Length: 275
Image 1 (cartoon, rainbow, N blue to C red):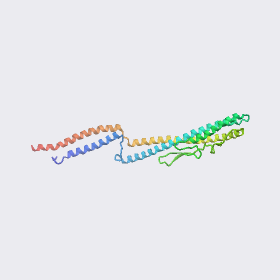
Image 2: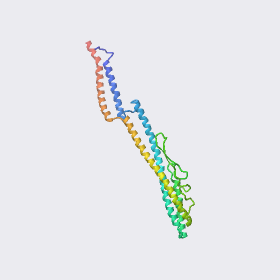
Image 3: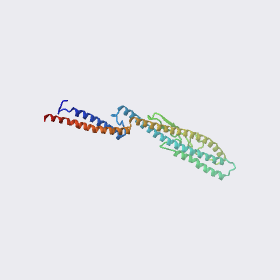
Image 4: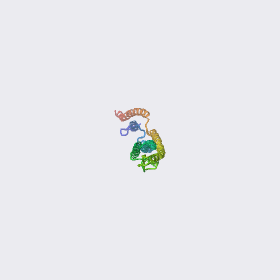
């Protein structure tokens, strides 16, 4: 073996190994600090790219959930309004049937008519206020309820607006309908029966659409959770393994420092040749 004070091959080797250990130790510490074994493209370019694409999908699905929440809110308001209108129509029919009695005195019919008019006008009040986030699906020329269903925004669920106003085709009484005579009351009864049938059909359409929105939201939530779990399997660090690796590398680092110290002492042995 050649002795030289200019070149210390042993120190070079020890330093190279120590640098490798330090690099591995830094990687392990980063994994422990972040909880990620792939925190950047530098760690694993292919896996990082896949994870980023999946994160993009999750972000899109979050927007889908928000859209569906808004649509469900609008549908719930429309359903509440429709049910209230249906209840009012039942009350109106009760008043009209009572007023259609030809033996009823004028004062009683007038009282029934007053109640009828108030209930009739309440329909307009309910329909005009049945709005959620700017969407009213039960007014005349109402807004369709739309919720996107995929993370690209190219697919959606649409609930067609149902006109429950006194100026629409579903309710066949008008803003001027009264039951102040037996004949008018009898005509109102017939119109109210048709209106009830139409409103219940409209409610069925709104209800089935709302149910579909809820089912879609449930699916999107499960899909988002599944994708996030998949991302975790790709990039999350196994902290139990990282902990064991940390202990091992710390021991290797200490041994590497000692080995480098020993190698650095080697040139000193040359002095013994000159004594």
